[in-house]
Image: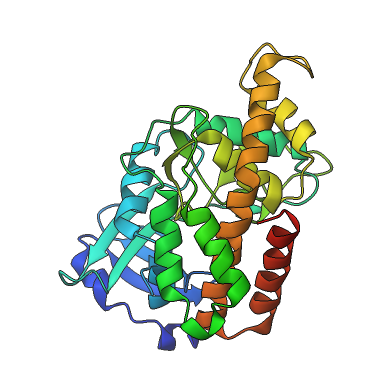
Length: 303
């Protein structure tokens, strides 16, 4: 098979009861070079499909850690919300040939039939999962991105934005929960046989590479921005999913809205830096344009 010719299965030799059959590259995934694998297991005379998730130089530029991802997936593997981890392979101590292998989830990417309300309900289910060991340190993530961005991209305006946020103290509104930090329909798998309506409880979430412990209101804000949701409607749907007694003017709703408003500039700033890292990695002008738009947006906020 032609696809197999560009896939190196050497690391699979570290796995017992596993024989390599086929590999095909997966489209999508901005920070990965993933493959769909077919592996044969002699002990039960069966073959199964998996996803090969390597720790590429690109993934490292975005601060991704496959060990943390593996540990989190092990923690939540009985939730039926995520692919089960199959193996974490590491051929050397430097972790530069590390690969995470997870179960392949049958289904299709969610579309608009998966409603905004279901998206917020799914967010609440994620926040109810066991708490991961590792948590997001926003300033540490910002510093990682900043060090990856070359000097020639650090304009006077960007330097001003950097110093503004660097001088701000982080305010946490709610106790840490499990957070996905990249929740959108592009990372949601639903059954293939869905017609007009999608059962939200049958949905599964993929790409947990940014997931860790964190303030759930930060995660909700990222979801709102990534999916262009109404903050007021999203907060209401989310709080209802958490079975909190709320009204549109309840203290709890207002607190969540306050948190979302607080986190929005931080999320815009993280996205700005992310796009600049993306431009540095892929040299795609679209990333630079997105970064410039976010820079102007932050400037319009008085930052």
